Amino acid sequence: MNDRLERTQLYDWHKEHGDVIPFAGWEMPVRYTDIREEHMAVRDSVGVFDVSHMLRLWIEGPDSVNFLQTVTTNNVSKLDINGGQYSTCTNENGGIFDDLMLYRIGETEFIWVTNAANGAKIWAHLQKQAEAFDVKVTDRSKDVAMIAVQGPKALALLSKMSGRDMSEFDRFTCNPLTIVGYDTYLCRTGYTGEAGAEILVLNCPFTEDGKENAIGFWEELLSQGAEFDIKPCGLGARDSLRLEAGFVLYGHELNEETSPIEARIPYAVKFKVEPHYFGYDTVQNHKKEGVKKTRIGFALIDRGIPREEYPILFNGSKIGMTTSGGLSPILNKGIGMGYVPPDTVNDGDIIEIDIKGRHRRAEVTKWPFYDTEKYGETRTS
Amino acid sequence: MGDTEIRDDLKYSAEHEWVRIEGDIAVIGITDHAQNALHEITFVEISEVGTVLKANDECGLVESMKASSDIFTPIAGEIIEVNTVLEDAPETINEDCYGAGWMFKIKPSNLEADLAALMDGAGYKAFIESE
Image (cartoon, rainbow over all chains, first blue to last red; front, side, top):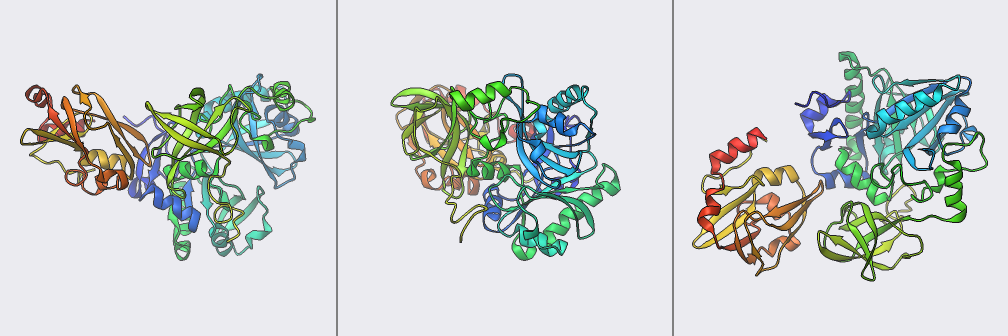
């Protein structure tokens, strides 16, 4: 009954070692041991995630820059070769089709990495828009695996494995790199708040050899990472880590009715760039004239765990809805995000979350939810 | 999931709760299969003592790192005790779901009919295998 679900190149390993569940049309490991243990491995040492379910597109051709400028909101022309940028793909109303990482690997060659759940939609959108340009979009998800290595020890591990000092590679860069004999693109990015990389492992088609290549690289990370207490991590920890870092997730904080300005991801958006992207005027209006809703973060004061689509109350009145929630293993309390009208609440205000009829107090807070002196990429201790 | 523990002296609901009759009281918890599927349980909340429920009424929730699940009572009656250990140690359900991890006690109002609607151990085993 599961034969319509997709699998990554690493599926056989996950099935043997983890708890594999259906996720966004894929069979993916939600955990290998405990979600909290995996979460803390990434905050304290290093964890690895198979993120090969994400869509990886190669975009090339003489018009690639202009094409990408019409379908994404960041400034593509400003991207250096081997540079990367976080961006969004918007519709005509400035709502978000998807958020993505865009890497430039040549003068007219780019890699677009995007959400599994939006794969078919984005593929269709880009194919249609590409008709007007001299550009080719190729889906290489099925011959490139993608593995995230995240945590305060991640870069030390990758330096050891590649023989290259990771401090050579700035955040957001994407460089071809051979790591213990495996050809990869090393993208200095992640979705946990910690330092690390997302590694595109080339030569991983869905053949016996291709799968062996992906699993071989994964096992090499685990064995060489043993001295750093590395742990394989499932999608459960991936979600709790991104929530604790205050990162948006498509289908939760982002959707086609929400602009990047409302989502408070202004770094994904540039203005005065030509040609204009879809929804440019609306997004610019939101920036200049203001928005009707805005994203907030909150931490529970009372006991209880917030989840998505719970009412948010302030002074007894409903002001919005939550979009994500869960337990923060660092704070050991419920945290979440949601949308409310602008200027209704400020950091430090006490709101209430209606958890299935029980009103629980929460404090409006900034993200990341953890202490940035102790955790995260910019930690000082 | 081959090592799921099912006890023959309990009755089971399709919502993965178990019922044990102790004198004229029904003790209710969630099954080994349920706690294993939820894994790391982080929070439990049960309706207050004194709440009167019909069979299959929602009467609380269990949170795990994975998801939020509602709790339903398979037995109608009045809640006479809630396991307060779970307030500070919800993981007790993961450790001992049929013992120290019990959730609440009901003074039944329609026991015979409610029990008749539940599965025995063999029935529950077949049920989870078919799911």
